[in-house]
Length: 541
Image 1 (cartoon, rainbow, N blue to C red):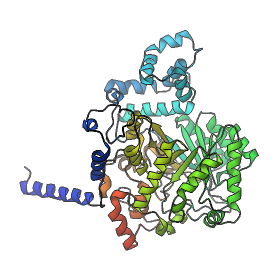
Image 2: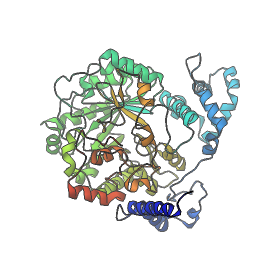
Image 3: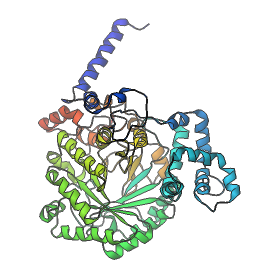
Image 4: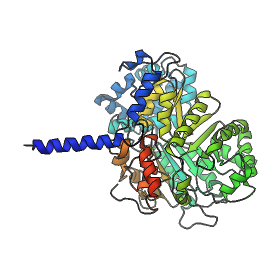
């Protein structure tokens, strides 16, 4: 029998631990949520019954539901999803054949008859959206269909989980080369000007692209270093495009020309993201380590905007040096013709490891995320952020009728259904929804976790490395957290940035010290001048 005294002691210890986590900041997530409910919710929203909100109502619930959740959780549905997402003799999955026959007005009547029950299900899911809208957003988007295949396979294997676990990542950030023509102070890659040793050959890169293509990953983002320096970029982009993969490119913009923009568009690239550190040339160039680069960067942006088939995004990493000009950079992005601004959370790794004193405070980050959310809701420009707290800010302050919320690091959606999606896909996706590929073939959970190598594609297949991820359980279970992150009301939509936890504490399960709800831990870190020394992660986590 259990010792009553021992059980009471354990219970008291748990209560004390929980109380300590609540005291991680002056305001904890529960108080924050309740304050929002009291100040901004209508009385009708106090009900726990999930329903769409009326126009203009602001959402304060943190647990949103859709009838599909109950259906997807059933054993027979998991069996069905496994069946229709499996390979067929045609080379396509049944999911692809179902959507092709539904979206194609010239599809053979036999195909329509064969998949009639599935077509009726799509009619239900469309929920009033026009057939043409379905074709534009799903039917003609091979990358979206690829994502649906992975989602179906994942629910078939793991069931519906919070957050959702995946059989393979939904996207990969491929640091294509360590070479770069600049020397930025915050470079997570510690890129070099010379020829690095040990990078994958073109043949190895093409083989990796084939592996990714056959696994149905829907998205690949090429980064670096400066990826446009590599002569291998265009051949690999073409190979990925042949599978229907959506591709984006992160560049400093200084190497972009009209010819290169045209070649990228022809090869299948759709989105080019150019980094900007300041609207002031001297300030930008001081940070980039080379004079004359601001003008070349802006010229590169204009080449992208002028190229048919390409969309421009502007990437900003916000720190103490440019915090006061965030809105100036947002206005600049709109004026230059960008469709999106991507905010990158500062993580002290690579050359940025020496910049911890320039990191934002939790209150500054909260202010920044609120500004980004206001701009996203205005519709002036798209906003994405690698800060998982952005999902929580959107959830709290966006109207549900047409307000947008961050569903993943790479996208957002409008309406209450988007909040349901965010519950499964949102927050930190390191090692779960995405992985990073290093120039030498190493796979890590995130570009900001260079020390956490899962394996190398020269020794094992991409699939094998991802499936045998030693950190998978920890990164997919948000109950296993320290500080306030474990008890946070918003953890299904956030989970805290695992890279920041790793960089500052050397632990993947630590609380995110950049969050408002862990503010006291941030103060202690700054007062002690302590963070995990580069290259020495805590092996226990």
